[in-house]
Structures are given as C-alpha cells and as structure tokens.
Image (tube, rainbow, N blue to C red; front, side, top):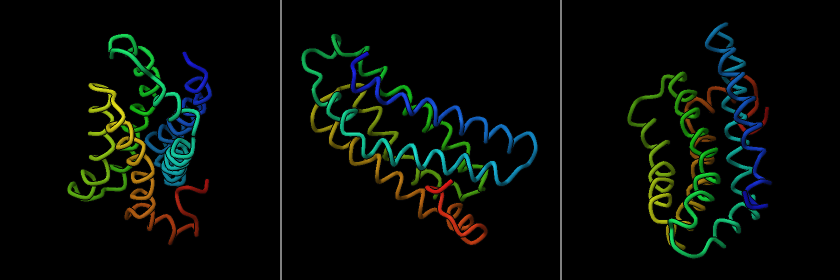
Length: 157
C-alpha cells in the first residue's frame, strides 16, 4: 500500500468506533450512541476531505487501470465501509426515503464511477463529493434534531 493510503488508516479507526456506537444503539436503544456513530462518520468524512496525501496519492496513480486496481481498491474500500454504515445510521433517524437517497446518492455514484475508470475528471468529482456529503449530513434532519437536543452538530463528538 502506498504511503498516502497508509496514512489514511484513521478511517479504519473511525469505522471501528462508529460500528461500536451503532452496536450500542441497536442493542441497548442508546440514542446517544447513535448520535456518536453519526458524529464519527461525519468527522471521518471531514478528515478525508482535508487529507491531501490521500487525494494526491490517488491523483498520482498512472498507467493502465489493471496495474492500479489493487491500490485503488485499497484506497476506496474503507470509504465504501463508511457509506454503508452511514446509510444504516441515517435510516435509524427515520428520514424520508427521498431525503435519504439524496444524501447518499452522489458520493456513491462517484465512488463507483471512479473505481470503474479512475481518470482525473472522475477523481475530481469524487474529491468534490466527499465534502458535499459531509455538508449534507450536517444539514440533515437527524443532525438538526441532535443540535436541538445536545447543542452539538454531528461533527463534534
């Protein structure tokens, strides 16, 4: 694994912590744990948005897709985990299906497109969609509900 991708190991730590919080919510109906899971996901997306080494490493991949497929997969598998977990968390807030699809769609589509054909245009789209996703989560009904209840947005655990 390339150094820029190795430095993004923080995503795994966020994923593990948010998984534990989601488990606590599912098993003990602990709403604070659900809020914590959401906050951790939001924080991970924020950190990834600002992670120059990760994005520079992806941009530096050259040559045929087949030569880079392993590096691309390693780099994006962790982000894929978050997208799946984020959907679980958002569903627990019982958002309307249309809102949920809007929150989840863009980044998922960009991720799949880039995986299939990692070119500069799709990389730029993916790079723009990560912070857009984080901002949508902050503005979502679940986040506003948390703000009213705790005085904190998801980005602050």
